[in-house]
Length: 285
Image (cartoon, rainbow, N blue to C red; front, side, top):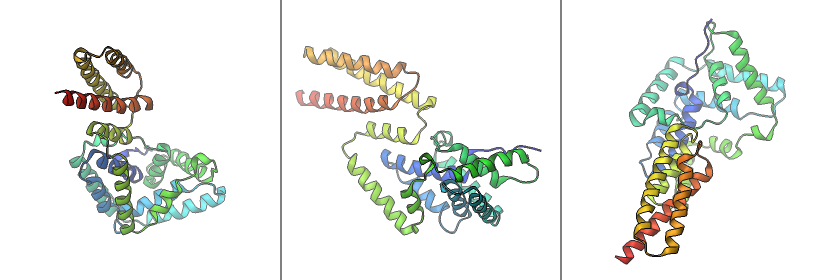
């Protein structure tokens, strides 16, 4: 008997979560809201993908049930999942993945951090299980889900706001998106393009991966080089000393084994420092 091979690309729950994060990323980068259009296209009430997503959400968001109640609820969700048009579901998923490959660098897109990855994978394996697969693997995934649904720990309590949001009709959801974007853009309206790009990558990418680390190192080296030019040209001795201190601190980012939140926060401030120096230079010209 063969094992069920799990992949992010085919996991409906991960597909939706990844796209939701990309919506934020697109807005921060000032890009067209392609990701939002894709969500509307493939996860509206008429698609099998949206129906399967609802099954994922019930299993992932339910906590604090008695074990017997969790088992009954799982059985009901499982039956609902079996009633879906598998042929149509697979066709929609194939079209969605093809469009994502066309619109984005799909490896970068799916490098984003996924909360509760093991739970997502377990639900996928339960939904994809058939007689050719290993029953041991099924039991393992089943126990993971039932244990999650029976757990009353605060760490597993679902996001109430998200739960309520998921119940809204499409028109209200669209309006909600719009309001969120407007508030977000208002809050960060004074951010430079570089600051927006960094914040976008920080939100949407896995900061533990090499790509993000390379990006941070390249940016740190670029800013360090820029500050070095100002050190040479600025006559103010005190300013020179402060800029040299900043250059030394930037070296910590370049040599860091892992990129931490403090590094991202510092880089946002360094971008602002460079912009201020640019403005001073222009004013003196």
